[in-house]
Length: 380
Ligand code: PMP
Image 1: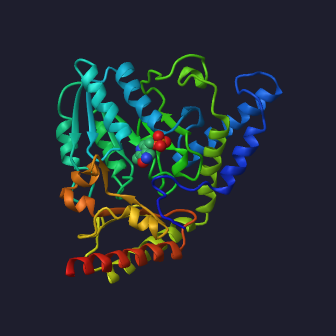
Image 2: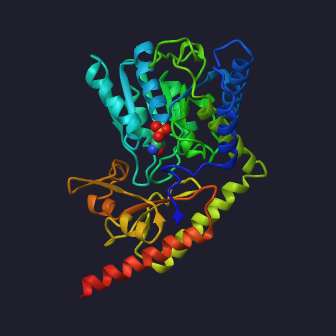
Image 3: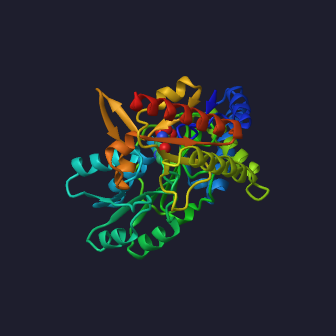
């Protein structure tokens, strides 16, 4: 099987699996003062430190959550409730875990308005639209992802941070897809969110990094765990797995980004081979800076092929979703101006730490077969 869907979930890194097993055997609660509790607490502290190193944050500012969905919801609701935010400016290509709570906040909290910020045809945030939107009145929270999960297009976070700071606006950066693939700097924003399973860690664990002084009402209350910022007995094995994945990705790139370079080679060879075999193939966001691992390919005439690829042993994602027989194009591709029929003809191929040239080759070969079959059907 050729698994090329790392942006959906990355297979677990061996270092992460080992750390999970070790944490599971501790059998202590990080809140307990005895030896077992202290051992568990040391695991939590180590996980926070590893996440902090990956993101240039302080370990104290890292809150361990159940994943990036919780992290994004906590940042949005928490900032609005504690920070008196009345305006939400959210990029059109954000993940539903940002877009949906932002819409719900605007619907439920009187006086809070939501503005969706456009992106260019290459999928980069329109900075002029951001500047214009920031000229209005009221405390503002801006949400922009560090890189898009469908196209891999990297957003100009340093510039966005400068613009937000000049306007005294809070900034939330969803770093889920970018984490471990480009350098992250949590000091550029007020809230940064991560998900362990996109890094080669376990599903159901993530982080919210909150800058010193940034307003935050906890979403989950109860016990005083994590300094009262996220109640509930910590997911020790999840945190351990996340920390180990963060450390592993840093170690794999310590020598001048060698893992990134290898993945970039696989991705670029894939795109070159695909364009040679199927010259009609269009790579979304190719004119922008992209992550090393992601390729969003539009293949006119080849619609809804994810299942057909799966039958060939190739796992990728679709640029559209289908429910009740109705094709819904991805909102991120639509925001880039892609017509709905092209979104249905788009797939996302995302490589990662365990990807090989054989994986890339299998995707190309399968697409070539499907293309030939579709052509013969048209000719018949
Ligand atoms: N943000 C982005 C960009 C994502 O791709 C995802 C996961 N698909 C999330 C947030 C949510 O992460 P989790 O699965 O950890 O809830």
